[in-house]
Length: 299
Ligand SMILES: Cc1cc2nc3c(=O)[nH]c(=O)nc-3n(C[C@H](O)[C@H](O)[C@H](O)COP(=O)(O)O)c2cc1C
Ligand code: SF4
Ligand code: SF4
Image (cartoon, rainbow, N blue to C red; front, side):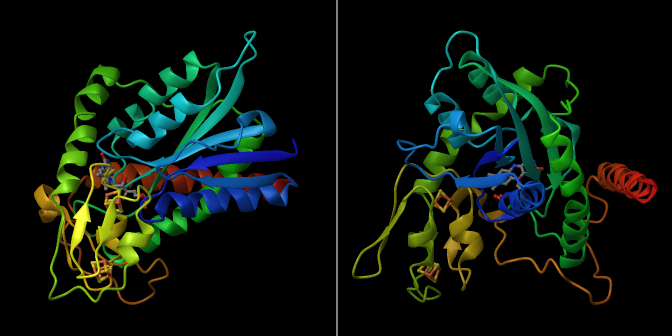
Protein backbone atom coordinates (compact mmCIF):
# COMPACT_ATOMS: atom_id res chain seq x y z
CA UNK A 1 0.00 0.00 0.00
CA UNK A 2 1.50 3.34 -1.08
CA UNK A 3 -1.17 6.00 -0.78
CA UNK A 4 -4.30 6.95 1.16
CA UNK A 5 -6.90 9.67 1.08
CA UNK A 6 -9.31 10.73 3.81
CA UNK A 7 -12.16 12.99 2.72
CA UNK A 8 -12.81 14.95 5.89
CA UNK A 9 -15.39 17.42 7.02
CA UNK A 10 -14.68 19.02 10.39
CA UNK A 11 -16.61 21.98 11.77
CA UNK A 12 -14.46 22.92 14.74
CA UNK A 13 -11.38 20.75 14.31
CA UNK A 14 -12.14 17.66 16.42
CA UNK A 15 -12.52 15.27 13.50
CA UNK A 16 -9.56 16.82 11.73
CA UNK A 17 -7.40 16.18 14.83
CA UNK A 18 -8.28 12.47 14.61
CA UNK A 19 -7.46 12.44 10.88
CA UNK A 20 -4.07 14.01 11.62
CA UNK A 21 -3.34 11.07 13.93
CA UNK A 22 -4.26 8.61 11.17
CA UNK A 23 -2.15 10.46 8.64
CA UNK A 24 0.86 10.41 10.99
CA UNK A 25 0.48 6.65 11.56
CA UNK A 26 -0.05 5.89 7.87
CA UNK A 27 3.00 7.93 6.92
CA UNK A 28 5.11 6.14 9.55
CA UNK A 29 4.41 3.04 7.46
CA UNK A 30 5.37 4.82 4.24
CA UNK A 31 1.77 5.45 3.06
CA UNK A 32 1.59 8.93 1.56
CA UNK A 33 -1.65 10.40 2.90
CA UNK A 34 -3.87 13.20 1.63
CA UNK A 35 -6.42 14.80 3.94
CA UNK A 36 -8.96 16.39 1.63
CA UNK A 37 -11.01 18.93 3.59
CA UNK A 38 -14.53 19.31 2.25
CA UNK A 39 -16.08 22.67 1.55
CA UNK A 40 -19.35 23.60 -0.16
CA UNK A 41 -18.01 23.22 -3.70
CA UNK A 42 -17.55 19.53 -4.53
CA UNK A 43 -16.90 20.06 -8.25
CA UNK A 44 -13.20 19.21 -8.21
CA UNK A 45 -12.72 16.20 -6.00
CA UNK A 46 -9.65 13.99 -6.07
CA UNK A 47 -10.61 10.56 -7.44
CA UNK A 48 -10.60 7.63 -4.99
CA UNK A 49 -9.12 5.58 -7.85
CA UNK A 50 -5.82 7.38 -7.39
CA UNK A 51 -5.39 6.00 -3.85
CA UNK A 52 -4.90 2.52 -2.39
CA UNK A 53 -6.81 3.29 0.81
CA UNK A 54 -9.89 5.52 1.06
CA UNK A 55 -11.55 6.96 4.17
CA UNK A 56 -14.38 9.34 5.04
CA UNK A 57 -14.38 11.33 8.27
CA UNK A 58 -17.05 13.51 9.85
CA UNK A 59 -18.53 14.79 13.12
CA UNK A 60 -21.88 13.28 14.05
CA UNK A 61 -24.75 15.73 13.69
CA UNK A 62 -28.10 14.55 15.05
CA UNK A 63 -27.04 10.86 14.88
CA UNK A 64 -26.18 11.31 11.18
CA UNK A 65 -23.29 12.31 8.97
CA UNK A 66 -23.52 16.00 8.00
CA UNK A 67 -25.29 16.63 4.72
CA UNK A 68 -22.05 17.43 2.92
CA UNK A 69 -20.94 13.79 3.35
CA UNK A 70 -24.09 12.64 1.54
CA UNK A 71 -23.41 15.18 -1.21
CA UNK A 72 -19.87 13.84 -1.44
CA UNK A 73 -21.13 10.24 -1.76
CA UNK A 74 -23.38 11.35 -4.63
CA UNK A 75 -20.56 13.29 -6.31
CA UNK A 76 -18.07 10.41 -6.44
CA UNK A 77 -17.72 8.61 -9.77
CA UNK A 78 -19.78 5.45 -10.16
CA UNK A 79 -17.58 2.36 -10.40
CA UNK A 80 -17.93 0.06 -13.36
CA UNK A 81 -17.80 -3.72 -13.98
CA UNK A 82 -18.48 -4.68 -10.35
CA UNK A 83 -15.00 -3.47 -9.40
CA UNK A 84 -15.67 -2.53 -5.76
CA UNK A 85 -13.52 -0.06 -3.86
CA UNK A 86 -13.24 -0.59 -0.10
CA UNK A 87 -13.35 2.31 2.35
CA UNK A 88 -13.32 3.05 6.07
CA UNK A 89 -15.15 5.67 8.15
CA UNK A 90 -13.92 7.81 11.06
CA UNK A 91 -16.40 9.77 13.13
CA UNK A 92 -16.24 11.97 16.20
CA UNK A 93 -19.03 12.90 18.54
CA UNK A 94 -19.57 14.46 21.92
CA UNK A 95 -21.14 11.48 23.62
CA UNK A 96 -20.57 7.76 23.18
CA UNK A 97 -24.17 6.55 22.84
CA UNK A 98 -24.62 3.45 20.67
CA UNK A 99 -27.19 5.40 18.63
CA UNK A 100 -24.24 7.18 17.01
CA UNK A 101 -23.59 3.87 15.22
CA UNK A 102 -26.46 4.65 12.85
CA UNK A 103 -24.76 7.79 11.53
CA UNK A 104 -23.20 6.18 8.46
CA UNK A 105 -26.21 4.15 7.29
CA UNK A 106 -27.38 6.61 4.63
CA UNK A 107 -23.89 7.41 3.35
CA UNK A 108 -23.12 3.67 3.19
CA UNK A 109 -26.25 3.03 1.09
CA UNK A 110 -25.38 5.86 -1.32
CA UNK A 111 -21.79 4.69 -1.66
CA UNK A 112 -22.85 1.06 -2.14
CA UNK A 113 -24.95 2.09 -5.13
CA UNK A 114 -21.84 3.72 -6.59
CA UNK A 115 -19.70 0.61 -6.09
CA UNK A 116 -17.95 1.33 -2.78
CA UNK A 117 -17.92 -1.12 0.14
CA UNK A 118 -17.27 -0.17 3.74
CA UNK A 119 -15.01 -2.48 5.77
CA UNK A 120 -14.45 -0.50 8.98
CA UNK A 121 -15.76 2.32 11.12
CA UNK A 122 -14.11 3.91 14.15
CA UNK A 123 -15.69 6.30 16.63
CA UNK A 124 -13.82 8.82 18.78
CA UNK A 125 -15.47 10.76 21.55
CA UNK A 126 -14.38 14.39 21.50
CA UNK A 127 -15.78 17.43 23.33
CA UNK A 128 -19.08 18.89 22.31
CA UNK A 129 -19.06 21.91 20.02
CA UNK A 130 -22.76 22.27 20.66
CA UNK A 131 -25.22 21.34 23.42
CA UNK A 132 -22.91 22.10 26.38
CA UNK A 133 -19.27 22.77 27.09
CA UNK A 134 -17.27 19.87 28.42
CA UNK A 135 -14.64 20.77 31.00
CA UNK A 136 -11.06 21.09 29.71
CA UNK A 137 -10.26 18.28 32.11
CA UNK A 138 -12.70 15.99 30.28
CA UNK A 139 -11.59 17.24 26.84
CA UNK A 140 -7.99 16.42 27.77
CA UNK A 141 -8.98 12.90 28.81
CA UNK A 142 -10.89 12.38 25.53
CA UNK A 143 -7.92 13.58 23.53
CA UNK A 144 -5.42 11.49 25.52
CA UNK A 145 -7.50 8.38 24.80
CA UNK A 146 -7.93 9.28 21.11
CA UNK A 147 -4.18 9.89 20.74
CA UNK A 148 -3.42 6.40 22.09
CA UNK A 149 -6.26 4.63 20.27
CA UNK A 150 -6.11 6.17 16.81
CA UNK A 151 -2.64 4.83 15.86
CA UNK A 152 -3.72 1.31 16.84
CA UNK A 153 -6.88 1.60 14.77
CA UNK A 154 -5.02 3.25 11.90
CA UNK A 155 -2.83 0.14 11.73
CA UNK A 156 -5.93 -2.08 11.71
CA UNK A 157 -7.25 0.07 8.86
CA UNK A 158 -4.07 -0.36 6.84
CA UNK A 159 -4.50 -4.14 7.27
CA UNK A 160 -8.13 -3.77 6.12
CA UNK A 161 -9.30 -5.52 9.29
CA UNK A 162 -13.11 -5.63 9.29
CA UNK A 163 -14.56 -3.42 12.06
CA UNK A 164 -18.17 -2.56 11.43
CA UNK A 165 -20.59 -1.14 14.01
CA UNK A 166 -23.24 -3.44 15.44
CA UNK A 167 -26.72 -2.80 14.15
CA UNK A 168 -29.18 -0.69 16.15
CA UNK A 169 -32.86 -1.79 16.07
CA UNK A 170 -34.79 0.44 13.64
CA UNK A 171 -31.48 2.26 13.01
CA UNK A 172 -32.26 3.32 9.44
CA UNK A 173 -35.65 4.66 10.51
CA UNK A 174 -34.23 6.58 13.51
CA UNK A 175 -31.50 8.07 11.31
CA UNK A 176 -34.10 9.09 8.73
CA UNK A 177 -36.20 10.78 11.45
CA UNK A 178 -33.20 12.74 12.71
CA UNK A 179 -32.25 13.86 9.20
CA UNK A 180 -35.06 16.40 9.49
CA UNK A 181 -32.27 18.30 11.25
CA UNK A 182 -30.54 18.93 7.91
CA UNK A 183 -33.13 21.16 6.15
CA UNK A 184 -34.00 22.65 9.55
CA UNK A 185 -30.38 23.76 10.02
CA UNK A 186 -30.42 25.56 6.68
CA UNK A 187 -33.43 27.57 7.79
CA UNK A 188 -32.01 28.14 11.27
CA UNK A 189 -28.70 29.30 9.76
CA UNK A 190 -30.49 32.12 7.96
CA UNK A 191 -31.64 33.41 11.34
CA UNK A 192 -28.17 33.77 12.88
CA UNK A 193 -27.41 37.21 14.32
CA UNK A 194 -24.30 39.01 15.44
CA UNK A 195 -24.19 41.42 18.36
CA UNK A 196 -22.62 44.52 16.79
CA UNK A 197 -21.52 45.77 20.20
CA UNK A 198 -19.41 42.69 20.68
CA UNK A 199 -18.20 42.16 17.08
CA UNK A 200 -14.67 43.45 16.44
CA UNK A 201 -14.94 43.05 12.66
CA UNK A 202 -12.13 40.50 12.33
CA UNK A 203 -14.02 38.63 9.54
CA UNK A 204 -12.85 35.29 10.94
CA UNK A 205 -16.38 33.91 10.67
CA UNK A 206 -16.79 35.15 7.08
CA UNK A 207 -13.47 33.72 5.94
CA UNK A 208 -13.74 30.39 7.71
CA UNK A 209 -17.31 29.33 6.90
CA UNK A 210 -16.85 26.16 4.81
CA UNK A 211 -20.06 26.87 2.91
CA UNK A 212 -19.30 30.53 2.11
CA UNK A 213 -22.58 31.23 3.84
CA UNK A 214 -21.64 34.47 5.62
CA UNK A 215 -21.13 37.89 4.07
CA UNK A 216 -20.45 41.19 5.78
CA UNK A 217 -20.87 44.52 4.00
CA UNK A 218 -18.84 47.69 4.36
CA UNK A 219 -21.16 48.87 7.14
CA UNK A 220 -20.50 45.73 9.13
CA UNK A 221 -23.93 44.25 8.43
CA UNK A 222 -24.03 40.46 8.22
CA UNK A 223 -26.01 38.34 5.79
CA UNK A 224 -26.48 34.62 6.35
CA UNK A 225 -27.40 32.50 3.32
CA UNK A 226 -29.37 29.27 3.10
CA UNK A 227 -26.46 26.81 2.99
CA UNK A 228 -25.67 26.45 6.67
CA UNK A 229 -24.52 23.00 7.80
CA UNK A 230 -24.68 24.04 11.44
CA UNK A 231 -21.04 23.09 11.83
CA UNK A 232 -20.70 25.91 14.43
CA UNK A 233 -17.29 26.97 13.12
CA UNK A 234 -18.40 30.60 13.03
CA UNK A 235 -19.95 30.83 16.49
CA UNK A 236 -17.43 28.50 18.16
CA UNK A 237 -14.47 30.42 16.76
CA UNK A 238 -15.71 33.97 17.25
CA UNK A 239 -13.14 35.68 19.52
CA UNK A 240 -15.77 37.80 21.26
CA UNK A 241 -18.65 35.30 21.39
CA UNK A 242 -20.79 37.72 19.38
CA UNK A 243 -23.02 35.10 17.70
CA UNK A 244 -26.62 34.23 18.31
CA UNK A 245 -27.33 30.92 16.59
CA UNK A 246 -31.10 31.37 16.56
CA UNK A 247 -33.17 28.41 17.79
CA UNK A 248 -30.09 26.58 19.03
CA UNK A 249 -28.61 29.52 20.90
CA UNK A 250 -29.17 27.84 24.28
CA UNK A 251 -26.78 25.09 23.12
CA UNK A 252 -24.07 27.47 21.79
CA UNK A 253 -20.50 26.58 22.77
CA UNK A 254 -17.80 29.21 22.21
CA UNK A 255 -14.03 29.06 22.37
CA UNK A 256 -11.32 26.45 21.90
CA UNK A 257 -10.81 23.65 24.38
CA UNK A 258 -7.53 23.25 26.19
CA UNK A 259 -6.60 19.69 25.23
CA UNK A 260 -3.50 19.76 27.44
CA UNK A 261 -5.14 20.79 30.67
CA UNK A 262 -2.97 19.78 33.61
CA UNK A 263 -4.46 21.79 36.46
CA UNK A 264 -6.65 20.58 39.29
CA UNK A 265 -9.72 18.45 38.61
CA UNK A 266 -12.48 20.80 37.45
CA UNK A 267 -16.00 20.69 38.83
CA UNK A 268 -18.22 19.18 36.15
CA UNK A 269 -21.89 20.07 36.33
CA UNK A 270 -22.62 17.59 33.56
CA UNK A 271 -20.81 14.70 35.29
CA UNK A 272 -23.98 12.58 35.44
CA UNK A 273 -24.89 13.08 31.75
CA UNK A 274 -24.55 9.73 29.89
CA UNK A 275 -22.20 8.68 32.72
CA UNK A 276 -22.44 4.94 32.06
CA UNK A 277 -21.87 5.37 28.33
CA UNK A 278 -18.71 7.46 28.91
CA UNK A 279 -17.43 4.94 31.47
CA UNK A 280 -17.98 2.09 29.00
CA UNK A 281 -16.24 4.05 26.19
CA UNK A 282 -13.17 4.90 28.29
CA UNK A 283 -12.92 1.38 29.78
CA UNK A 284 -13.12 -0.30 26.34
CA UNK A 285 -10.61 2.13 24.85
CA UNK A 286 -8.16 1.73 27.72
CA UNK A 287 -8.43 -2.05 27.53
CA UNK A 288 -7.67 -1.98 23.80
CA UNK A 289 -4.70 0.34 24.37
CA UNK A 290 -3.30 -1.89 27.17
CA UNK A 291 -3.73 -4.95 25.01
CA UNK A 292 -1.93 -3.36 22.04
CA UNK A 293 0.91 -2.18 24.29
CA UNK A 294 1.29 -5.69 25.75
CA UNK A 295 1.45 -7.20 22.26
CA UNK A 296 4.08 -4.63 21.27
CA UNK A 297 6.18 -5.56 24.34
CA UNK A 298 6.00 -9.24 23.40
CA UNK A 299 7.09 -8.62 19.77
C1 LIG B 1 -25.49 20.36 14.76
C2 LIG B 1 -24.73 19.43 15.65
C3 LIG B 1 -25.30 18.21 16.00
C4 LIG B 1 -24.61 17.35 16.84
N1 LIG B 1 -25.18 16.13 17.10
C5 LIG B 1 -24.50 15.24 17.86
C6 LIG B 1 -25.04 13.93 18.11
O1 LIG B 1 -26.10 13.55 17.59
N2 LIG B 1 -24.35 13.10 18.92
C7 LIG B 1 -23.15 13.48 19.48
O2 LIG B 1 -22.59 12.69 20.24
N3 LIG B 1 -22.59 14.70 19.24
C8 LIG B 1 -23.23 15.57 18.44
N4 LIG B 1 -22.66 16.80 18.17
C9 LIG B 1 -21.31 17.11 18.69
C10 LIG B 1 -20.21 16.87 17.66
O3 LIG B 1 -20.43 15.67 16.94
C11 LIG B 1 -18.82 16.77 18.32
O4 LIG B 1 -18.56 17.87 19.13
C12 LIG B 1 -17.74 16.61 17.26
O5 LIG B 1 -16.56 16.14 17.86
C13 LIG B 1 -17.43 17.91 16.51
O6 LIG B 1 -16.44 17.65 15.55
P1 LIG B 1 -15.81 18.74 14.58
O7 LIG B 1 -15.01 19.68 15.46
O8 LIG B 1 -14.94 17.96 13.67
O9 LIG B 1 -16.93 19.44 13.89
C14 LIG B 1 -23.32 17.70 17.35
C15 LIG B 1 -22.77 18.94 17.00
C16 LIG B 1 -23.45 19.80 16.16
C17 LIG B 1 -22.82 21.09 15.80
S1 SF4 C 1 -15.69 36.32 14.14
FE1 SF4 C 1 -16.96 37.42 15.63
S2 SF4 C 1 -15.83 39.33 15.98
FE2 SF4 C 1 -15.02 38.47 14.07
S3 SF4 C 1 -16.28 39.42 12.43
FE3 SF4 C 1 -17.26 37.46 12.98
S4 SF4 C 1 -18.80 38.04 14.52
FE4 SF4 C 1 -17.36 39.76 14.37
S1 SF4 D 1 -22.75 29.75 8.85
FE1 SF4 D 1 -21.51 29.05 10.59
S2 SF4 D 1 -22.49 27.15 11.24
FE2 SF4 D 1 -23.27 27.60 9.19
S3 SF4 D 1 -21.91 26.47 7.78
FE3 SF4 D 1 -21.05 28.54 8.02
S4 SF4 D 1 -19.55 28.37 9.69
FE4 SF4 D 1 -20.87 26.55 9.77
